Length: 243
Length: 254
Image (cartoon, rainbow over all chains, first blue to last red; front, side):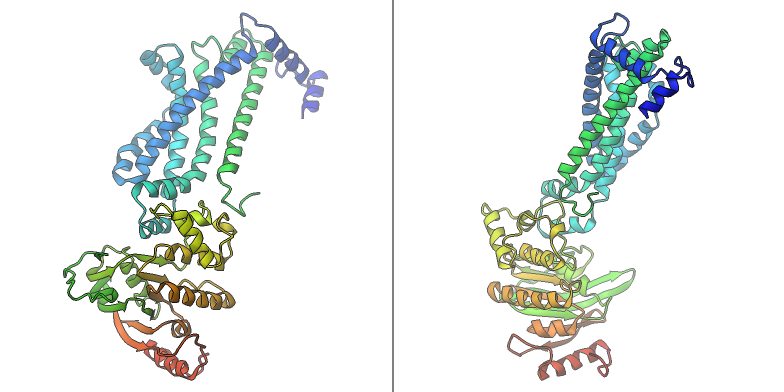
C-alpha cells in the first residue's frame, strides 16, 4: 500500500498538495521529532500530552461508567435512576458541548479531560450494564443454593460474568476517547496532536496534518492491541472460542 | 441444626410433627402457575439417610417440588421443613465457567480449610488431579462429577438431584450411578433424586414415588439389596407397576 501510495504521489497521479507521498511525511515526522519548532512543538511532546489526556479522561470516565453500570445493573431502582440519564448523555454531541465546558471549566486541562471522560464513560456504561444483565440466571440461582452472600455473588458470579462484555466496552471507550481528544485539542490547546492538526490547518501544511493523523491511527491501534492482550489474559477460561 | 422453614408458610411448621429422623418433611405443599395447581397439597417425608427417587410425567411438578425443597421458590405455600444443610446437583452441572474446578467446589464454603475439603471431595469423585482445570475443559461426565463434589463438600443432610444423569451417555450414566451409590453409602445424606427414568429410580433408590395430579400418587419400597440390575425379576415387576402408575402401557416397552 505504501509503495502504491509513493508511486501515485511521485508520478503526479495524485497531487502532492492533496496527498503528500510517504517519503515527504517521513521527513516531516523526522523534523517534528528532532526539531522543536515554535509552531508545532515536538511530535513526542505532543504524543505525551495527548496520551496523558486520554489516560486521565479514560480513567475518570471509565470508572464512572462501570460504577454507574454496576448500580443500575444490580437493582431496578438503580436502573430507573441512572439509565435514562446515561441514555441522555449518550446523545449529546461532544462538539456542541465545548462552549459549555469552556464556560464551566475554563480553558485549561480540565474541560479537555472531562470531555474525554464524558465520551469514554458511555460505551463502558452500556456494555457493563448489558454484561451484568446477561449473566446466566441459572448461575445466580446456583449462588443462592450455595449460600453466597451478596458481596460474594457480585465478586464470583456477576462481575466475572460481565467481564467479556466490559472489555468490549473498554475497547469502544478507548476509540471514543481518541475521537474526543481531537475535538478537545482543537480549542485553546497549545500542545498535543490535535494542536498539530489545528496548526497544520492554519498554515495549510498538509504534511503536518497527515503526520498527526497517522500518529492517531498508530496510537489507536496500539492501545487497542493492549486491551486485546488483557482480554486474552482475563478470558482464558473461554476454551474453544479462541480463534 | 435448627429446622429451616422455607417459602411462605400458610401453616406454620409444627416442629413436633417433624420427627428427628426426617431429613425433610413436607406438608400440604401448594404451588400454582397461572391458576393451574402443579403441586396440590403434597405431603412427603424423606428419612435421614434415605434414598428416595421421584418419577412423574413431564410437567407433573417434579422439578417444582425440588426447587421448593432447595429454597428457590418463594411462591410456594404449605409447610416445608428441612433439618440441616441442603445441597443441589442440577440437570446441567452449572459449574461457574470462570472459576477453576477446585474453586467451583469451594464456592461459598466459609470454613478455614475450604481448599483442603474441596480437594478431598474432588478426589472422592475421581477428579483429584483436575482441580486446576477450567470447567470448559471437562467432559460431560467429569463436569457432573465436579458438581456432585460441590454438593457433597457441604456435608448436606438432604441432597437434591435434579435429573443429573439425563444428559450423559449410557456408559457414563452407569458409572455415575455407581459413584452416587458409593458416595451416598459413605456420607448417608437423605437423597431426593428427580428422574424420568424408571430403571434409574429402581436401581438406585430405597423408595420410589410417583408424582401425579400434584400429589404423591404412589409410594413403593424397593427392598432389593444393592448392587441391583435392571433385569432382576423383582425390579421387572416393580417397573411394570410403576409404568402402569405413570399411564404407560407396559407391553412393548423396553
